[in-house]
Length: 141
Image 1: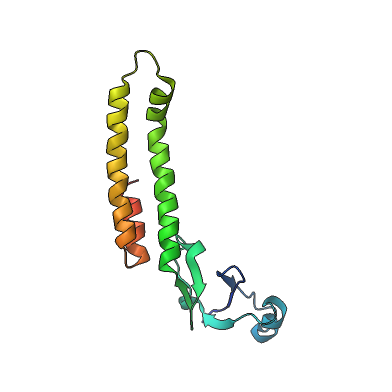
Image 2: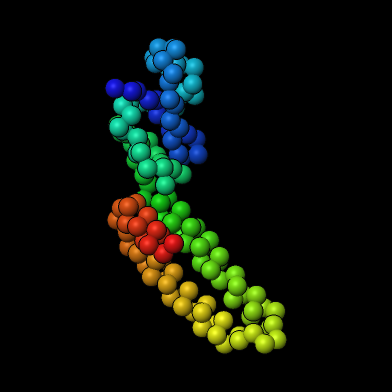
């Protein structure tokens, strides 16, 4: 069983230390864990294998957990970025009023994009697990 050290960071996240085996793990704790930090020595299985929401990881009582509110924030950021990317070709038509370009069609396309991502937003807001958020985001790629 491979052991890892996890500890809470001052920013509210979690650090994961992957020992090499060159130093006994108990001695490694005193070298790498900041004084006073809440830490645990855990098995590798206590750390999520999926790093999609890595920035939402927090130290739980016995393992690394994913903070659902942080996952939702990450999901919304990814949703906004994807929506902005899909808007780009239509934004230019509307902003520059390009002669011969159909601004009405561009605005209709933008509305379809808004509607699509409004549904994703609703799923993210109603999600009860990080997997629901990830599934909603991946379904719209």
